[in-house]
Image (cartoon, rainbow, N blue to C red; front, side, top):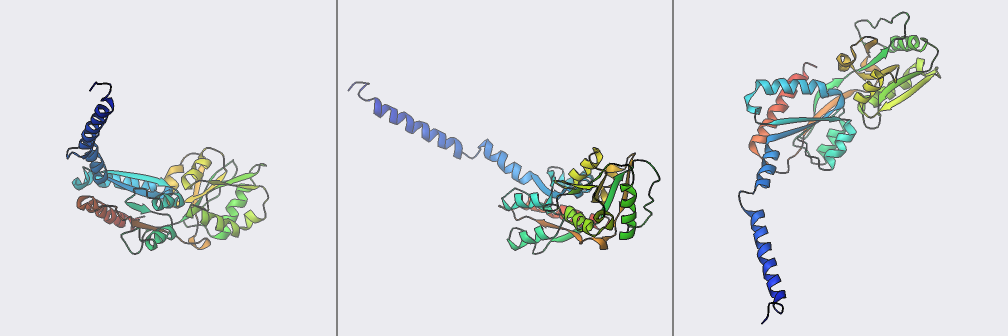
Amino acid sequence: MTLKNNFPGILLMVLTIGLAYFSWLLLKPDNASGDIEKKSNTQTVNIAVAANYKKILSNSINKYQSDNQITKDFTINIISGSTGALFTQIKNGAPFDLFLAADMERPQTLVKANLTIEDKPFIYTTGTLAIAYQSTGGKEFNCGDNNLDQSQLDQLIDHLLKEGEDSKTIAIANPITAPYGKAAEKLLEKLKSIGKENRVKIIRGKDIIHAQQILLSGHADMAFLASHMEEGINKAGFSYCSIDRSLYPPIEQGMVSIKPKGMNYTHQLIINEIIVHIKNISDKI
């Protein structure tokens, strides 16, 4: 029989041997890609956090890791965004271990969907709205040491609206996805100074950090932010006044841990340690 006549048989044999060798490479115990995947899953903790709390959490976690040897082999990733966007990612299977939201609604929804370890969220902080603004000159408004009530807030906004002849712009976070934006929108509906003034334009940032950036870039005259973000805009030309919590819906911020797809004791131990740490610092915010 000639080589030409037996070519189909030889080709089939070569393909069979090649397929067997390739299968062995994939299944052998020391498969490098498998080790990398396993290491990645067990040596990394991913925390999804509402944008308003990112800086506080990042600073705290950095100090926590430097003081605790148990976490030295772990990478702790902090991913921030609007609560609504992070919630959607978690529902779609994003590999987060902890979720620190800016509300209670989304964590509670994850609990009901059986996606969390806990049966109810932990309130790690209660938010306070603040108004941040840039002055265009003239007499400065004195915020005082206490949170502004409605009368004082209306006076401040009246004061800002009278500065200059141009229309004024207020930046808030997106009310649909960001709880601080939702609270700000409810507050704006109450203010007499806004209701009677036609020279006010509202700009909605994708989250509260974006609203802050709009103010700092000069594209807004004032912004409604979280009170603990004062340090981020404590610079020349900007002022900051906290607002009484009775003027808007409560901003209770909930935390839950997401059920893992596979259980690793050391990995879960680190997550539990981080949860304890966050609960401890929550009393100080």
